[in-house]
Length: 198
Image (cartoon, rainbow, N blue to C red; front, top):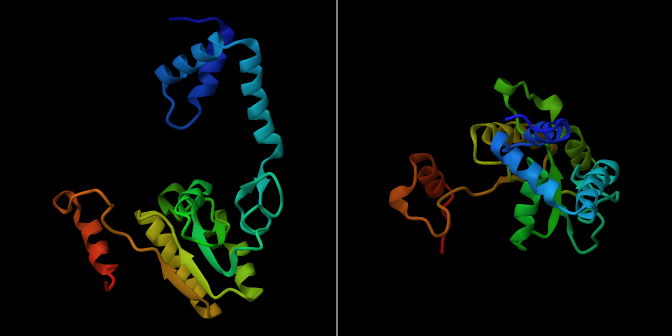
């Protein structure tokens, strides 16, 4: 079914977003169409503001509107520990636990030779610069438990070893609330490997 050109353009623009197919894009387009003019303009202004004001923190490469970001500028955080994550949303997942009190470093991806992502595409040099500057006691590698995440963790650990900083990897295992019988072999193996004394 053909829509008016402005609606078609909006649907096409929305389809470029991850996880949005034709039907979802149409639903969103019609939801925007049924909003008041003020609500629709507020949405457009919010998108423009994100594009105009958001940048990367010059220290940890997290997305921010102030530089350094609120984590790097927080005097209450432990400046001797850096938690390395793949993406900004991974940082927020760690932060939600309210357990980690150190600093962060965002790589903006993981190594993936099949997708053409090598070390040059990741924010690795700023991490190495931070460690070489001194004062870092430990680097926690909190990359995803995927093939790419594991490759990235191994690659980083090899780079960090000669710098004399303690390097650790987050434990990976069975999620709370799930049952062991439904756990795959790799997850079960990692759970046994990461066991601790109680």
